[in-house]
Length: 281
Image (cartoon, rainbow, N blue to C red; front, side, top):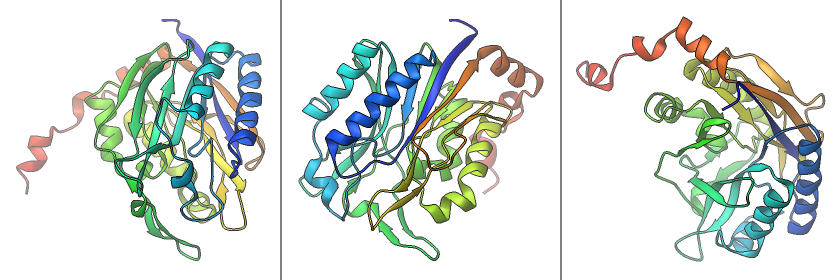
């Protein structure tokens, strides 16, 4: 594995048009390839954002359906890995879907999938009320996968608020790079987005690649944006100049930096095992 490998985080404003969103993603893939990136991470709901409640259920399909097949072909034809975070995968019944993070390699093969674990059932202060669990099945499995970009830890959006998942990815699954595709609301994004991402990077000593939805999707829905890439010291090393624009942020994963940060501050050795905390209850 090379010491440096280039990655990119996409930012876009998905709408309720599968073809239009695919065209945007195709353009961003070309941009990433031209920049020398070997992995491009897309935000949650990259392929579709409905204009009203229930729209996502209507377009949900299996991973071998026509939508994901097109993205697999795009990865293969462009010779690039794609992180597709937040795909509307058919659930166990017609009333539910899975919010699935799909990792595709540069040969167009699905390498791994993660189903969003923590569902967004929240009354946003000064904003809207969300009830993701009303139409989404929560995932149960922690997913880390080896790649040319290190060991990748897969998560989705609201998972970001739950550090236990990221602790598991780092200390029990050896993650080196954490993927956080998201569609944060404007209110929560302004208050918490960057600080949560940097905290996850610092406390796990991992790179974090956070691809975000941005701007107005419809009259009903708007996302915060601000896609970024953060190093294991918590420094933002890649970011779009405009929080709401469509484009990519590019940065290099430096494996020697991961090793250096971890060896100089060996928190893996210093942290208390779960048994220690259980004994304090």
